[in-house]
Amino acid sequence: MSVLQLENVSKEYGSLLALDRVSLTVQRGEFVCLLGASGCGKSTLLSLVAGLDRISGGTLDIGDRKVSLMFQEAALFPWLSVRANVELPLRLQGAGRAERRRRADELLEIVRLRDFGDKRPHELSGGMRQRVALARALAQDADVLLMDEPFGALDAMTRDILHDELERIWREQELTVLFVTHNVREAVRLGDRVILLSSRPGRVIEDFAIAHARPRRIDSPEVSGQAAEITDRLRAEVARHGN
Ligand SMILES: Nc1ncnc2c1ncn2[C@@H]1O[C@H](COP(=O)(O)OP(=O)(O)OP(=O)(O)O)[C@@H](O)[C@H]1O
Image (cartoon, helix red, strand yellow):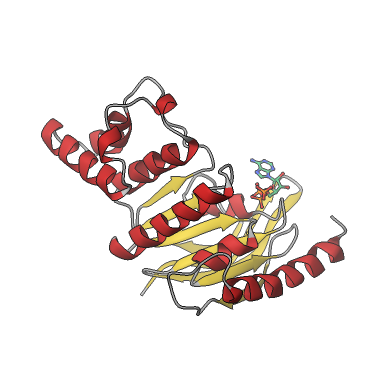
């Protein structure tokens, strides 16, 4: 069952064409990575799916499904405790105090931060803050999780660990994920599919199926081999555009 369908979606910002007739279908439970050179419109695509911006042409069908967004910066409220940050979406949903607390603790357990609920964000490492952001995104109980380079600012080791965690949570919670990155190995490590976008204006130039058994290691020969193939394709595309 598809949860998201884009057909010939274009996006113009004034005279700038950011996306050019992008077609993409995401099935329920799929982990789809969007990959492309800088400025090709990856974030634009996410913001269209999130309903933060309007398409200029084509059709985008997400039905009545809810999305939640996660960015490179955790964007937590510094004056609130970790638990209170996770509780915020629950508060907006109208959940009562006890229910909020119960669900927030459950989510903190899922991201392995159960003992950190009373801390403030500044007391946590960057990786831990992203875990809180993930818990907060999960609190929205969305059908589709939209992630815009969520681990881009983390060191390689922390990123590795969070890949494992995200994969586990995706599987356990049966999430559908649309994940933007410009890190080819990360895309192959995580995705069921890797959608390669052209340089601006962004068009889908290839849809790679990633069939290697999970869990994958980012430094495994399988991931490295397929990442090299995709990198060559991306390089050719960037060279064609001269940027
Ligand atoms: N609100 C906006 N107004 C005008 N132009 C915009 C706006 N948002 C994005 N753009 C332009 O659209 C193009 C695509 O931007 P976008 O941020 O989606 O690319 P990206 O692939 O996510 O880039 P990066 O990998 O560098 O984050 C860029 O040329 C950008 O300058």
